[in-house]
Image (cartoon, rainbow, N blue to C red; front, side, top):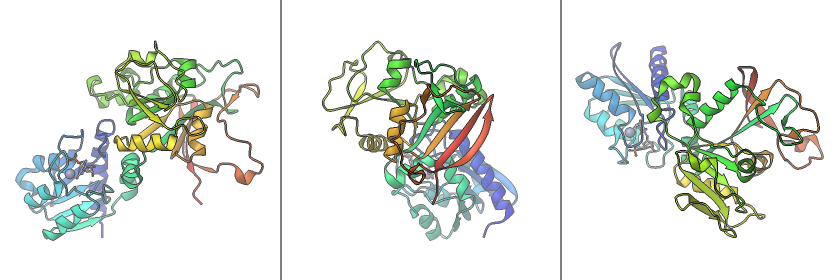
Length: 371
Ligand code: AOF
Ligand code: ZN
């Protein structure tokens, strides 16, 4: 159904979609290429929610040349009036002859209706070209549309022997500067960063994204285009009180606590409360709440106890572990506070997705083992 030429144009559309990597939230990253004969006549990417979709940018660039052309889109063209009018209508109006989509839009407001509209207008329609690559662009949007929950990445950093801090608590500078830059890029692409009261008490972090530390991504966007992720602080027993670094820098904060406690934070910080679950914030309800708020991708940067709680509740999708070439010894603290397992069959089974060197450290990406 698809030729090599089709695949080349879709690969270009995927590349364009990446322009929106840091800026489209809560919308998906989408790219579009319009081709007439063997000529690329228009290209576009969705860059910001509320602004035109990829197809509209590409159609504008193509002008009259869109008539009789093929449009390659990394996501099914939309069929609904959201912040912008339907792209399927725009493609029909422009007289496009063929539309190739990499994947169907999992948004229930679209979900096949865009392709149907095009088909009903006599346009040749197909989908599934480079689908896996298109899905990889939007793990959060896809998961939220299908389940209501965001895509959760747990970031961990440890020595080769799996230690995160010395017995006396010292934990600064385990990994090197390149790995820390890589963490800045993880933060920049996510919509929310979650941390816990313990980490805030120990490190007093700011948890924000610093443009100057994005490494090779700095060139991708101007400092003023940088969108700070929502910083979610889980403090079930209201142990934190200002002054805190978190409150000193730009960006929204959501304090998640339980119904039993009163917090002493400034009024400008929004608070969300859950009924206590074993005396703690109910992580399942919190993640559903973040999904409702349009959060696609969440980064958990927490200590051994909160990170493990996400694993125990099966609320996670990916672990990114930075491993430093150091040995810290058994008295040092371990990576995750998981319960004791009596048999190896009870251990959490993972699979490696990607392994690379980042500066002098290893970066491992792991997901659940597929059975
Ligand atoms: C497309 N092309 O480039 C994008 C699409 O509120 P709106 O109008 O921006 O619509 C957002 C929804 O449109 C989003 O949830 C997703 O279903 C679709 N995104 N569709 O045809 C695009 N970004
Ligand atoms: Zn659209």
